[in-house]
Length: 167
Length: 167
Image 1: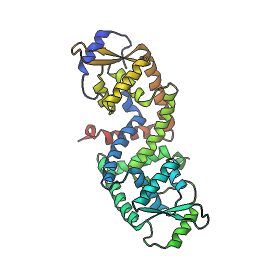
Image 2: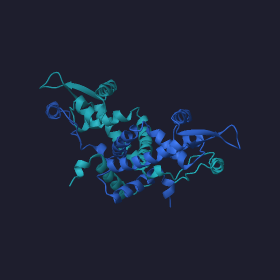
Image 3: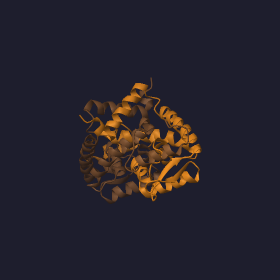
Image 4: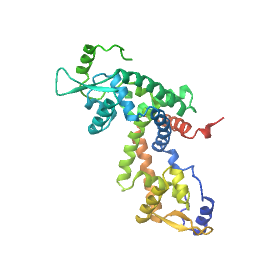
């Protein structure tokens, strides 16, 4: 807590002490929102670096994983699953098609709609990328034991999917 | 895991089943990076909504908290603490000055450098915002018990500040 008075001499003293470098010990550190953001940025940086080696952006990786898990998934399901805007999904799927990693196939029942499938090349790449993402997760969280990692995953899921944990 | 053969009839069958809505149960859910992002987005949305009522952006809130904790902090310390680019910090501090929440004060020792302080109005607002951020943290993580929240905070800190936890 700060002293509430406005004594300039006290403040000038602290000014000369805190003239460079990051500061810490703030109430921010008590906030889960802040800690989540800091941890997420760190893990994401590892992941982004790993994907970059294959010229793959994170959203492309997630899309490949969803398409692999649900062959024939529609663009609208993909958009909902990844919580991204439908127009962005169109570009995303275009970029995967251009790279020869996925393809749109017309649906038998409703010929206006398309299902998305991986190509052989996409299947091979997604296997490699999944392993890389596993390794980057481990590298970014090497300060945690395996039990702590499971614990963290369980706590995070409780936050973003509380319905699964309702009594 | 996917069957590795390319039987189109199998794929068409799944296509007709998965024609709408989000899908789940993917390997993504096993990744800490993914779970961190999902949880962070949820907590951040609560926080952003709470700040919006006071026309405050998240980076402005963090800045106010740092300035409160370290009266006279320099722009470069603030940039390092919040891990944002120096040019962005200039705009950030300008926006706080324009709102009458903070002010730059010339440093006694080095007259080219400035320390940043909260105004009385800034001090009053930051108190209110800290309480709001505490409440939004709780609301966004209401699926967790208090013990689970402390556990989560500890695990997240181990990821982003592993040096503090080194043996």
